[in-house]
Image 1 (cartoon, rainbow, N blue to C red):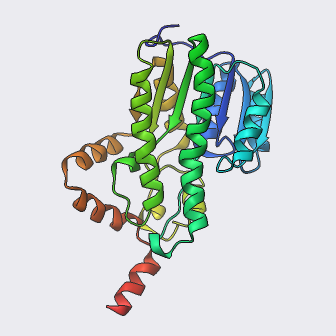
Image 2: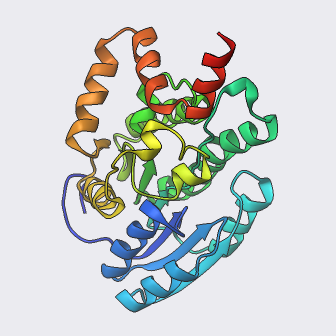
Image 3: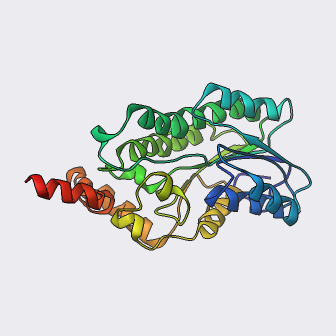
Length: 272
């Protein structure tokens, strides 16, 4: 299948962050295409396992692994073994809300190592295999947050800036091969992200969010078409355009209005 030819996925698909949200929805789509699945997450995968088997995946293997750690990456590679991976969907990632200097370093480091180190390590290992046989597809979940200086969500936005650029650069390096790299850029999506990032007490945490199934379908279609980058949702596309036009300082202030916790605002007002 050429880079720009639509069709169905087949073969072995590895999906990280597959327990809930966008990753779970990607697993359902791959299962519907009849793919064999290796599902990875640092939380319980029983729902994803059951859904994939019910929909029709011929085989499903689950791996409980923390991709922020070396042991987690090793566990995934051991589960794959020597089997050729046809598709990698590197979706694992999480955030950490609040003021950067108020956060614990271990929490900041976990965001960085999950979103960047774990993702890039798997892309490197499996991408080498794909490149050697000149076949394979890679879908990475980036974010429009990567285009926004992320006051009060600083580590997450900064890691996604790396991931968004990394994917485009890697796609260019692989331009003359049959291996594709696609970066999915969602905005705020209805997943467990905001609860895990402790951002429920923020305007963005309380606002309406995109449907995870719709976001996954957008990414899946872009992967099938060989598209390098896809922004899911019309308003996210608008936001991305404005982020590229407005001064970074203005965008950072706009982001602060969305991501600053109410408790932090109250604290600042009380001391001002």
